[in-house]
Image 1 (spheres, rainbow, N blue to C red):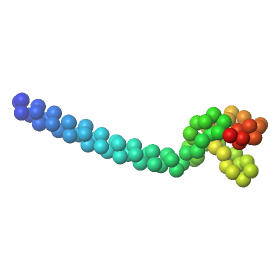
Image 2: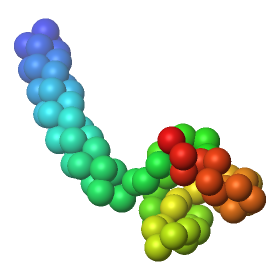
Image 3: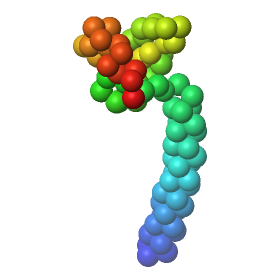
Image 4: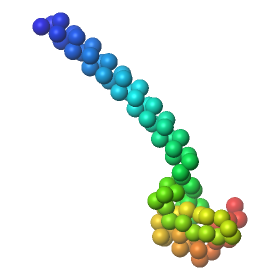
Length: 84
Ligand SMILES: [Zn+2]
């Protein structure tokens, strides 16, 4: 009985370790993907997903916003946020 417990704990340890390795690989891939698809909301400074974010074109450039509120704030006075 003791032996079975020992084998089981060794197995679960291996599962945890492999799970951790797989997770960290997935996480690295997510970070790489995130770098390609995120943009900075220049109103609030948040990183936003380009696919889901609100977009506004200004001076031939596309800007991304986390919310309607940020988009409207930018549109009211774009130069305020473009100066920096
Ligand atoms: Zn925002």
